[in-house]
Length: 363
Image 1 (cartoon, helix red, strand yellow):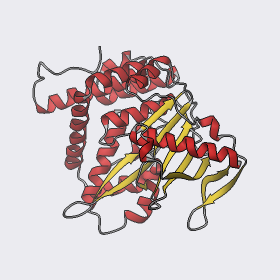
Image 2 (image 1 turned 180 degrees about the horizontal axis):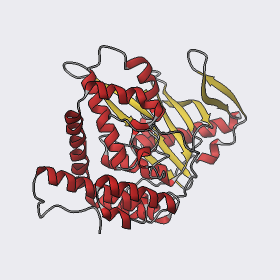
Image 3 (image 1 turned 120 degrees about the horizontal axis):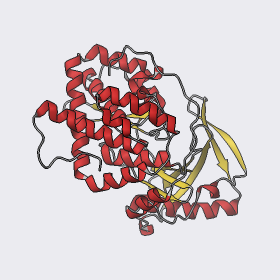
């Protein structure tokens, strides 16, 4: 993840894009789009809100919202059913002991989310899930993460509502401040995972992965713990015209991580880890070829960015991959398809001649 280039500056809030019929058909086919017992608008009629503070008494940018008693009874029943749909395909027999403990609201970010804390009355174990305004960019980002990363994403849509499970992990900025200086994590393992995370974001054009938009998951191993980095914000999927917006290493908030990688990895090792992740992505794409093709077809039919963004980005990617085929791409979906094709060709050049069974991610 080394870099010597100028870091990126923050961008303006991007517009939300509606879910068009092609994407809706895809979601319905794979049971992502369903009738839901509670919609986003149902949560917007709260009576008052109270700022939510962290354990140190600092603002969290969230507010706990309060409802009239009758509304809260209705919401408790509906949100419990919604949690059952998200977790166990609607089997309420397993959810009778759950109740909604708190509903929080955040005005920071594009999706203006409500966060629901649901509690198990038998053992006080708690879990979270979110209701957000549906944005096609975010939906495509979630599905691409589900298909091309090692992480599974559980979400549902209905009309203008998006429901997401909670992504567990240590926020990236907290990891930088509190975990990176620690001596009990093997530095090379951390750096390796940062390179792989950087590569995943770039190939599938997931932008804005500054520190507070991803998490670190500490994974115990038989000899020592390791780290996995994963995205938790998908609003900036395939929107920016800038190539480096899709490379986490270039954000000022991630500077300490980029320098960490430069200290602990040489260029040859970094390239090895980059190639490893590219190989895994192509292997995942092979396994779900039909589903991925349907998603990219839907993505090609959906406006996810202004036309000049597509033109600027395709020019930069054509130069990066030394592949003029990018220059005929007309949509962000086309660019991701060509990105996967370019990665496949690069791997084949490094390992040997193409097999007759290989295919390109395009018509």
